[in-house]
Length: 419
Image (cartoon, rainbow, N blue to C red; front, side, top):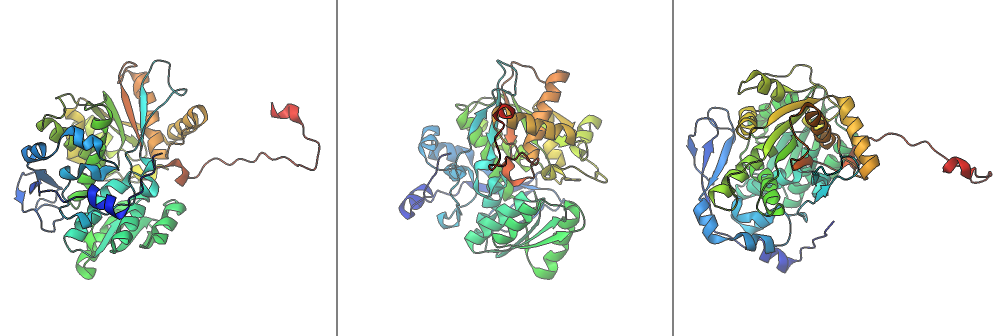
């Protein structure tokens, strides 16, 4: 892992002020235009707002070579992001997350690469979206942020908001991994366990807006988490030499990252930085919570609420996604598909990759490996396709199988048993 130490002078140079390239915000379903520089939640139609840019001006202001020469993580793409004032670009030392080829857990000659988002601050890809949400909240004068979370998003919000001097309140299902709950609280948020699912937590946040006055930072209910997750697509294009992989398997709950990457590829093509080729986007879910998969199979744009949702891969346990139609459009337009795998397969995949390749995937990341195995067997992907899997968090945050082997050093050692 590359360690980036940002001294004050380096920080000023890295986050040097850029001209404002945002032109407006746009309703993702109606196309109605909203003014930039103002606080916004969902559109009047109750759908996500998308940030739009003058891409011609960005192309004239910066080159691919200049982007490549910059140090650091996702803030190196500052021209593609909505923050205007350098002092609002809250950084906890981000890096460009590495691409790690799997070697022993895949057939010989097959290219399967993992983008390891667990190297980011707070150990997950949620750092991207929440860094941008916090930066824009700071820029817009919002001082109290609230959100529902299955764990990692709450941790990222707490960390970046505390660093920025903002107050946070977080609600999580009561079966959220305890390590997540503790890190959220330790990093400065007021955190509450709720006897329900993430949509129940979201209702508490929504109902509290008028009563308390906090800003709702729920997935896709403000415009800027998409812009943070968009940087995954920008990074991938740079890492692939301004090209893209053939297939991307993405663990899909709220789907912000899949939507953001698709937006990044569209913007890069419009600027002439990549060609028209797109990766086939694959939305990966658990069989215990698969609303996007069902909607894809049924040929519809909106997924009904998934009743009695359950999966131990808590990050993809999202019974309803406000951006469902954006996920499904990206999947279909790319020639991709949606696929569900069992929890049993998810944890078999985690253990297989860990033991054969020494790579500890989080459960959601393991779901993408399981989905690739299933898709390879069914013929939905081929062995000659360049495949990218997203490991969205470090596997160290999650429970692991117990290890109960022991040796009594005061007794003779049976070395034959150790061979």
